[in-house]
Amino acid sequence: LAKTTQPISMDSYEGQEVNITCSHNNIATNDYITWYQQFPSQGPRFIIQGYKTKVTNEVASLFIPADRKSSTLSLPRVSLSDTAVYYCLVGDEGTGFQKLVFGTGTRLLVSP
Amino acid sequence: GAVVSQHPSWVICKSGTSVKIECRSLDFQATTMFWYRQFPKQSLMLMATSNEGSKATYEQGVEKDKFLINHASLTLSTLTVTSAHPEDSSFYICSALRMLAGGIGIQYFGAGTRLSVL
Image (tube, rainbow over all chains, first blue to last red; front, side, top):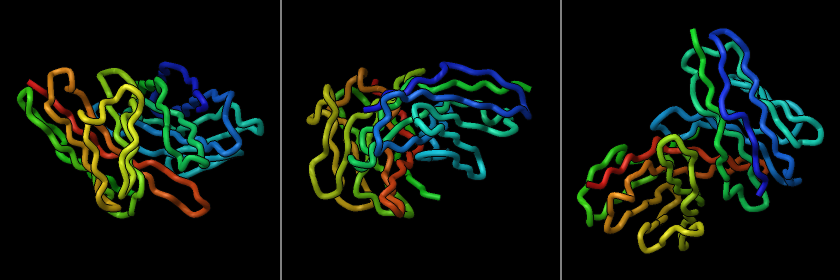
């Protein structure tokens, strides 16, 4: 299972762009990269998923370099409500995306 | 979007009783569902993988007789904590795997169940 490494915490201010980088040096060929957001006492919420290059949706962008050993979640113009823990995970398509191993995540604090 | 409903959201029980938690995928079918456990300020820990129509696969260290999992339909999986004790108090979260075109899967999570055993 590919292990992921993220910064434990990050601070930002409202209106700024936040980039959270995740390292997954042992990512396998079939692995996809998925990011989740979790608020206290709630289940994780799916943000975005990608395999290579760039993926964008209405919430965030995901940048994946050619070697796929890292990925960066970009949150444009964050607000106070974006304060949460963000998890980066890699899942193996070959096993049906089972065994998503959650790391420590990145605790993002957005201040006024 | 994909919706996963989990009930109850909060339960208090006496030591020695059993508690059942339900996880439903409301707008998609899920052959595979997962059960996680999360302690305060910690990350999610996978407990077991629930497969529709077959026995669940438990992670190492998780007692299968303690945490009974049933996945009788494509939209419902249940976790029963049998003979609960205070050390079983935790936040339990389920997820359902939604398969998309091209064989890509995404796990969608329920809101979680806070279990307090007195």
